[in-house]
Image 1 (cartoon, rainbow, N blue to C red):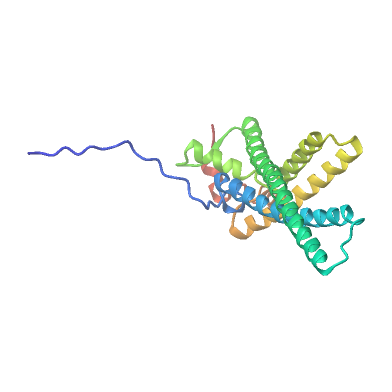
Image 2 (image 1 turned 90 degrees about the vertical axis):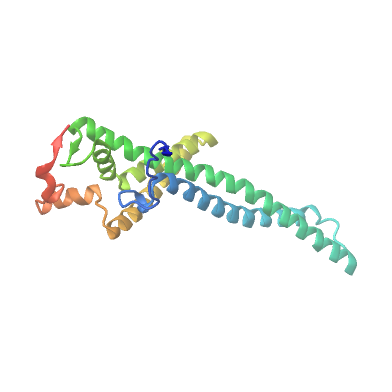
Length: 230
């Protein structure tokens, strides 16, 4: 009796965690949760430190007029102060952790969006240039990778700072200072990512541009002759 073998639908290959063309060699689906996790941890630690300090000072101020005068009273006083300090630290820690998670996630999402938006603008202007034997998706991914640099990080920092200022209803001078700080922080973080990318062998757009201008090297090396505009 012949047995029939049932073949299921082909399973698409999962995207690897580490890819050379992505920022920090991590794909966005892993880089975004990792960044949000680091934001949650750092926000929690900073919030606990600030919350516990504020709670301790608040308890001291509220009980300044009724200081204990016995050893047992001082024991209960410090015990209550410790409880209030711990509770205040945990409460503020969770509040700051979720706040940091939200803004860090927005920054990373905006950074990836700027990368793709710049690549789409270049593709509209120049067309999609494919190498020999390269699919359209691969050519698009390569074009996006060429626009992943500190400029996108700076725009993402500027945009995040602008939304943060609007959310908190900062006055115009404060919003301008916040935007300037966000742009500087994003630019510095972008330079750090570019340095890591260069060490790992990924091409950075402005570095390749400087090479073409100063050394006269082609954009894609020996493979430029195999490119065709689509």
